[in-house]
Image (tube, rainbow, N blue to C red):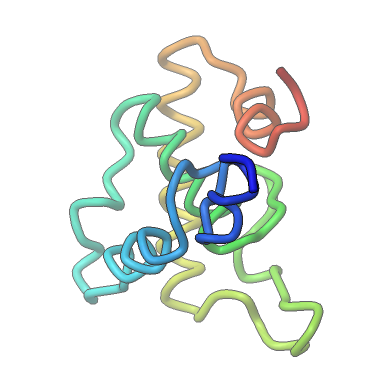
Length: 120
């Protein structure tokens, strides 16, 4: 078994650069605490990138920056992907992401496509 096969067998995700247990812990650390925890503050490009990685790699949602998070539905269950509270928080974080990207001269759509591996 080569290194890549071994990493995959142990749950390594090359996109997030985390093992399965680390991904679970990362998702657990993203738990909603009712106060919008410090992780939800979008102030710099790295915060936007982290937010996008959480949506795409942790929540496993293909997203578009213009979409309302209330509209995302799990195709397997037919249930909303996010609770109303989560969707409201993520919509605010996306609005903050737009502001940060505009201030820094970064195209938010290109950034999202790069995070999802759709553009280099």
